[in-house]
Length: 224
Image (cartoon, rainbow, N blue to C red; front, side, top):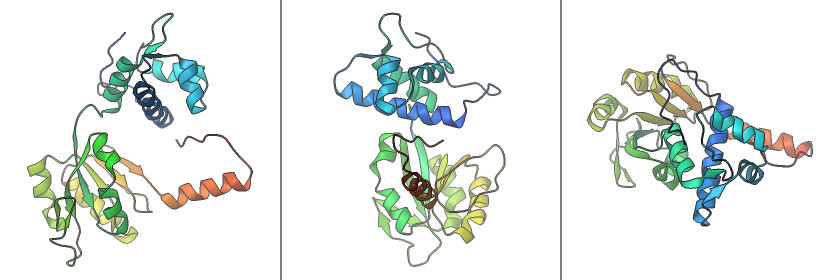
């Protein structure tokens, strides 16, 4: 099996929809591994997710050759390869910015840490929140972001601030050299092309869900 490495600069990046499905494949593979299954076919993998086997093979082929004739995919090997492709075979020091109700809930979400996203610092500009402790971390003022980023090697930021403050805070994040932002503020961010932004608007997802229910659409839906 080819051992895929991260794509070198300049290589064509996979479409967002493909990356979204790769994440789904990984979760299904992990579930199959927990059940003691050593191998899996593209049809088995796709059937569990409501995705055609041809689509599964096409998505995986974007990154290399993984299958074995007469065997399919060896689950342990494919899990390791997909984790490398997604960049979760390492630790990502992450800052949480904005300690409102959503921010505090996100801190407690165990899924971040289990995938390598370690929240190592908390920031807020509300004087009432300064010095509070959540999950063993003390809330710092946003003016400490640059220094803390350098000290802790922060690479990603989760942004959970009011809409009117989102762009200003995003500018501070970018100025600190952080190159990835998970944006929960319900506004688009203007950032340099070298900075990756993923927007999570929960109300939009609910609107999509309401539309599907209203129109009687069933089945599995994969965002992206």
